[in-house]
Image 1 (cartoon, protein in one colour):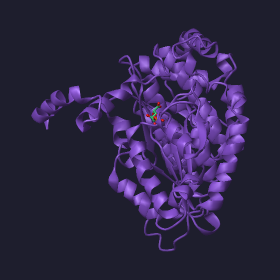
Image 2 (cartoon, rainbow, N blue to C red; image 1 turned 180 degrees about the horizontal axis):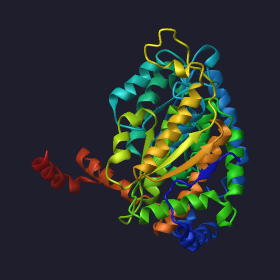
Image 3 (cartoon, rainbow, N blue to C red; image 1 turned 45 degrees about the vertical axis):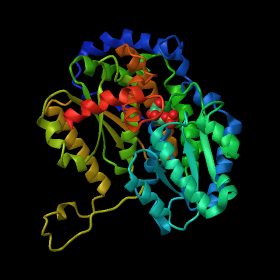
Length: 450
Ligand code: PA5
């Protein structure tokens, strides 16, 4: 196992972990015995043992076909139907995975994510990037009626039909949706798209290691066997009921302790831009699971050292309701060494020949000490390197830990009632059938406010 958790800089007093331990053990039992709120949504808990092998083989075959037929895959989805796959591809291939050429070129097709916003500019940009090249579409929506992906799908379906004709388009559309019901399932059956399943007992933010995330990952060139192996190993390790040997329990305990001490904001910071989207995935997982009943740690993500030149001031010296979890990647995939410059105008020659990775590490250690000195407790999660295995392992670690900390807070970590509020208002303002009654009152309110 490569994940290591270090809580030496969390500012804990000796008794604090011991005090919460029984509560954490109880939350752990509630989770593993499946007796807590939302227990019907625990399909992810044993996923590496129970996943559908036949579908997994079909995912690999579909990915191969996409790679043979296309240069680009447009993955259409939002929230849990998008974040994990994008986080995975950037985690492994890096932020420029789609653009690299020559020796640095990653395997697989370019993958672009549409339907995760309602921006016409963003959508048009993806169409422009595709240009005349061959492309396929994976539309991912459990309900099939989510506005953002539904709007985007219309555009890319139309583009496919213009390019390949109606029948040609059908063979390039892959639908990942509910096994039996929903608008997208109906359309897929009618049109004869190849379909994959969003399992009933897995919520969006826990779905990235089902077909939801695995098809874009595999088409993009990731080794999904290695992803599932990382997930399976983590599943086994974090099933250990021994608190002292289970870092998922300890991380949950620490987050709970921080919350009760008034540290209500967690910053997940990394020193690799490739982890930016992992931070976005983490934010959804934490916020949608814990942020309810007026409780929860507010999750923020940051890229260091980039953000040390922006929000660094606040972390060091602003209001003291923050704690920081650093996700540190030990090895660089490619080492670069600082070149020597005889003129030494920038005074940097003391570091000539030093690996950038080493400078990054010194920055991490120096920042950690500075932030702790400034009153921001630090939790340090270390992994060996960015690869498919580690992605699967990390995902499971965060799932398990979050589920325990949700139960510690006393919330149902597996529902998301708050997500509906904006949709109802948007539908009423757009005049969607069934929402007409609220339209007048909302417009009147807006009239006096905007
Ligand atoms: O976590 C969730 O449940 C949400 O983020 C959903 O995944 C998101 O709203 C997309 O829903 P759907 O897959 O039904 O389009």
